[in-house]
Image 1: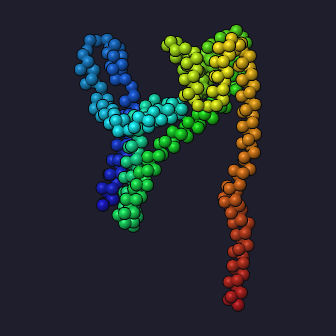
Image 2 (image 1 turned 90 degrees about the vertical axis):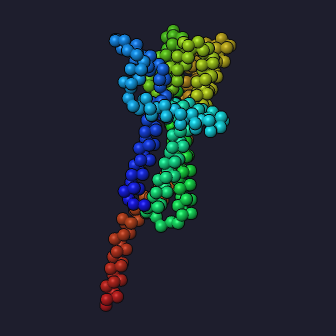
Image 3 (image 1 turned 120 degrees about the vertical axis):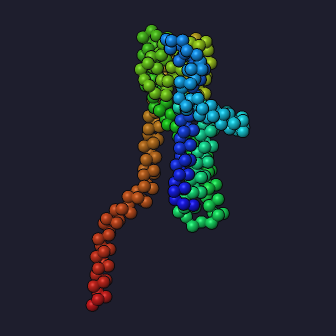
Length: 313
């Protein structure tokens, strides 16, 4: 295969994958609502056909194709896998407003991309046989299949860490608001207004769901399921129990705030105790060899030089 054809194929695959990701992000918007808003915003009277013809080529052709491809992958994916993917996306905070179908489509596209790239690389720059190239392509495709999930799980872990770090401060603010005479819902609203972090956004979502008619108990339970953080789960369980038994919410918030600060301090002490063990491997395999080279390198060159001089004599 000539280098020109190989280069064109690689750029073509990259362009298709990138275009698919952009189209799938755009495909999350409701086209009907977008058309209605655009039709209402126009002053002159125009038809729906003229609005459609004025839309970009991407929205008229490529976005429907991306939706059909996503629906095709959804039909081939087991329902349990879709449910697990949806739950994982919710735990990650629903980045880029993706659905399970969008994520599965991107995952399949990245799998094909990694498999093709591995095959082209081993064909162009390696001396492996046909069987080895096929094996490497399978390994590359498997890596491309699992990399999006690993990326999503890393976002889940970072989001959980951010929630755990922010929870004591949020409880302190809510305690102050409740002691000042505000209700628990108003205290959650204050947290949402003050900060822009995953925990504050979840409180804001709870307020929004309650405004739509969902009960506070169900909204808080759904919040606990979306976050899957033990500290948040225990805090919400205490709040719901206090609401059910008629206990003052201010006292519950004060106790929960103190407990969360104690837990945060214990986690910091635990990480401080783990630091020497984690530093051992970089020091042994990276820092110490460099020090030995710097300190013993000149002495080694001097020994080699003395041995060379003695051989000449």
